[in-house]
Amino acid sequence: MPPALSVLTRNKDFRNLFAADLIGLGADWFVMIPLLTLLPHLTGTGVWGAFVLATDTGVTALLLPYTGTVADRLDRRKILIAADLSMAACALALLLVRTSATAWVALVAVGAIAVAKAFFAPAAQAALPNVVDREDLTSANALSGSAWGTMLVIGASLGGIASEAFGPYPCFAFAAALLTMSAIQVWRVRRPLQAERETTPAHPFAAIAEALRYIRGNPRVASLVTVKSAVGLGNGVLTLFPVLAAYLGAGPLGTGLLFAARGLGALVGPIVLRRVLTHRAWLLPGLALSMAAYGLAYIGVSMLTWFPLVLAGVVLAHLGAGGNWMMSNFVLQAEVPDALRGRVFATDFMLATLSVAASQLAVGAFVDHTDPRLLIAACGTVTLLYSAAWSAVSLRRPAPAAS
Image (cartoon, rainbow, N blue to C red; front, side):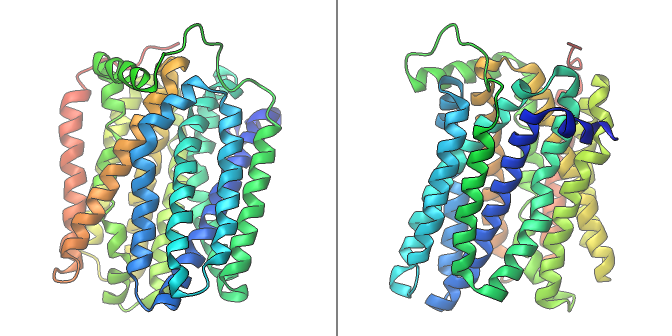
């Protein structure tokens, strides 16, 4: 059995934590896709859908510095369970969205879900090294890194099919049930999700300042918490998927296929590039190459006119992006002390999320009056230039020491 799968069969605690992550990600798509279909139907405008997406991204990004501190101060198991159950309750609140006059409920519910996700993400990433043996950390990261891509392909597809077949409201109820199942899976984890704390910062802001001082004083960690921003700054291409599909005559089905291709790349990338994790000297060059692959692939996509080749280019781009995410997570988990890990991951996620939001807003400002191929090429070029600058600074530093 491949090592990346054997850790699932051998380690019940990791299996439960991984299952909780998969179930929660699936539930997210069972909320978002039906909701983004429902709101234009009720209100006659796409503005509410845009507000929902902006709220989902923005609230999470703004809270991450604080929630990372909480992940280092409080019981991570309790944080994960409380976050899952809170999201389940908010998913049920979406059953109240019945008319244009109640569209605001969707915004409030999604905002509350974003708050819960902001607590869940750094706690889950910081907990991972505590539920696996050191020799299994590479395999666990490969699987964890592929989870998002897996559920983008499967969860988004099933969410769309279920919404079409049964309507949005059964999907919201099903999402609440899934999130409750996720909480149960976390509860079944028996290993401690953090090391014993000798001291606890007196105030959350003091804890945040401590983490920022640690990042600033450790140049390699500073490089690692900025590496995901390369792909984030090129993520404005996602705004262009519907426009590109229409431009190439693929229509709504083409839009779905482009998002599925994105998910497939994110799923395959961590698995294909897993071997890099076993060679510490390869990690920083691997990160540089993964960023460059994303940028070059989208520059290539901007020049293609045959839709199947475009899909292949999107898969290749997000293969690099998925590998980038997995490799940077692995090195941070290995390098950062447990007492600081939640806060450092929160900083990492915040920078990545804000770069995504900035890229999508920038592309949105030009999308109605600029050739989509030019905008796609611009996104790829931004990532490529970022990769070159990051490499010039980071590759001069020594590789992470073997532990």
